[in-house]
Image (cartoon, rainbow, N blue to C red; front, side, top):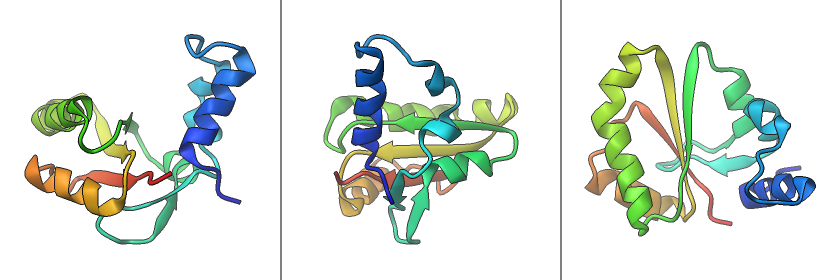
Length: 126
């Protein structure tokens, strides 16, 4: 059964009693995000984030962003775009971004900001 990303994050926060405390399970994101299925922006079906992280070889950057029209999300995408070569030089082999919105809005933002195709983009419409 797929678990919405927001529900998984909320459950993790409530389990420790505070949103400011990072639970130990967060240090194992592949385990924490197991069962969180999100559509790939641009088509390509759904992906289980936990399985995708577990299958990654090398270092993986996972950005859990905000909604597409949010200034912070724009900043996250711009920084990933600009610093992707530096991240690659430091050994990051995979870059994944989750945007809280429908796939079409995620695709539009990525297009406007010229996000490289090497960045895997996922939509969380919940």
